Length: 511
Image (cartoon, one colour):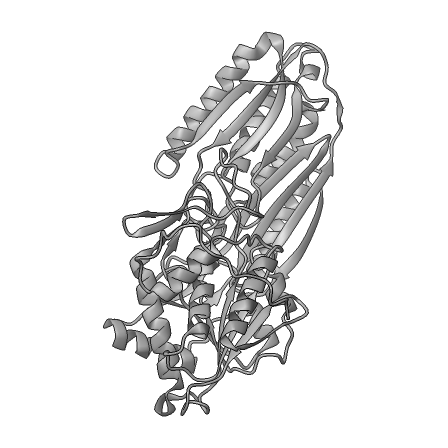
């Protein structure tokens, strides 16, 4: 147990003071003042433990750092099946290029716009902060009917599900799992995709920057980005892929230059994307161009921008390409040496590779060409492949491997996590559907999500659990456009409370 001297966060404003349900929003505003990027969740965990101590609730952390808080059943409901509510406490830290926000220190700046809540210039952390604070509000309440409750706050979800992967078996006593980490109100999720990281590396020749060239910074920005699972099929621009296309054009153009000129042209460094589970929104490269060919180079960049704008105008109206003359670097990778890897990156699949046969509009298999880094001849590329089927995931991996093997790169795969296979006969699903119909007048839509919920990994540790996932409407997760629909949060809260009541009522207890 942590020191009792730790003080809970206090919000720096009261942006959410008039929103309902106030217990949830009040806690979310406090949470937004605490840093919680993946692997840096300690401040949040200590705050949760302090609140649990103030309420007299038992809690423990397992060896992976996950926090479990327990609450006894209301009188008369002790024999109801135990419910485990589960969310992760970490968030994706993405910000706009001009933002100075430090996710390890700075509070989020919350902003209301009509019926939506945003964070200024950064991700909001509604994924999965709202679900986590709904759990906490239930655990701290004194007037919500429920049976035996456990709240499981996992860590490191966004960086590879480290918390769920390391969860200790045998610690949790419940038999029903309510995962509160999906992002569309009115839907019940019964399955999710698994995933695996692909890490590609190649050492390229590097030499001193020769004389006779001008160094330019090429910056691609203004793309929408988004969640690499939920948004992967929307046809949005990928800044890594766009820059690879432009750099390939520049490098192949070098072959048309006079002898000696081509040796002046190359790439000093290149960075694009930042997170494996976010579609790359921006990319920056520094290239050296022969002084006598600057006009041709600038015309080429303008041509590529025009083509991209024609192709992507409906989905990427903010796409920008900027050129700036800048100070030269010390090392350069010659253009001809970079060509094979650029071709491999453009052969590497990005986007939806196959749609589900059983769920209309749901992606079965995808790949996200997530990030690239080139500096002093060291080139690394990262992808995240997802699929609801293990065979689909393996096929995506083979395609990625073949593309980069042709360029002589080293490819490794790791950090695999399982999908969650749907169980159409689930008693919990039937009960939750009945509750939804009674509460809202219509049944929920049954869905499988093309994202990595922790349910698959949790089920491997607790195979007897009957599981369901639901949440409020969140858009733009994993990007600075992230926002949550405020009215949906009230309905999500009402549904959660109705479920806790009905699932613990003696007459409706599940076998």
